[in-house]
Image 1 (cartoon, helix red, strand yellow):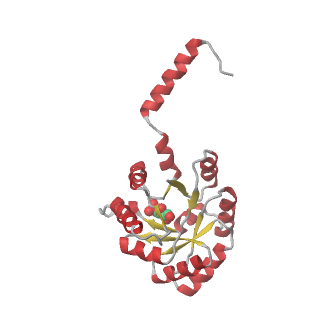
Image 2 (cartoon, rainbow, N blue to C red):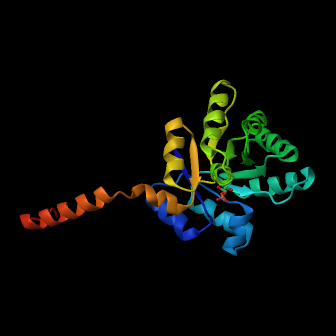
Image 3 (cartoon, rainbow, N blue to C red):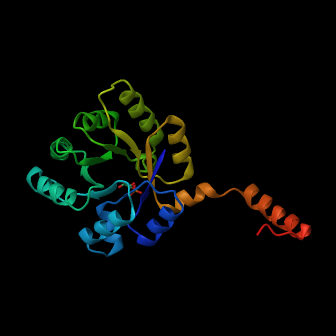
Length: 218
Ligand code: E4P
């Protein structure tokens, strides 16, 4: 399973990259607004750090403007994945960019039917939002299962399921059990995966016992 960081925080991105845990980055207009940074230079900076796909989202909703924005974002770097909303205009831009070899991440997916349309439009990634479905008392993870099941039936679909709106490690583990290709989450959720009280307790005991040997490996 590939791990994308759902952030534009440069320090967090660098740390995860150094830890060897980063396969890509996703951003959205809310994340960019929170950063307080200028969008294009920020995406350029992230693309220089990360080898994998960096999602940069269009801001407009009409086809003509979205198409121009998509072309501009795609030109930033080879590893930009242009993010478009799951609307008729967004999927038209998706098809257009995908046909030219640009990676497209179709975002704001909340149903299997929407995911089917995105695959037909040639999306590199479909982003189903599990957390936002859970927030309204619908089962976000069952959407992941449905999309994977549909995509498996068609060899011509190359679209990867990118589990988005992740709130906790359970979203990651359950998606991995189903074989979802990618998960994007806040760095804090990736860090939660490292933690287990028995690891901490066991390590403390090993450190103490090693001291008793009076030895040094180096
Ligand atoms: C990523 O591509 C999505 O924009 C993001 O995961 C949405 O997360 P949120 O529901 O926590 O805003």
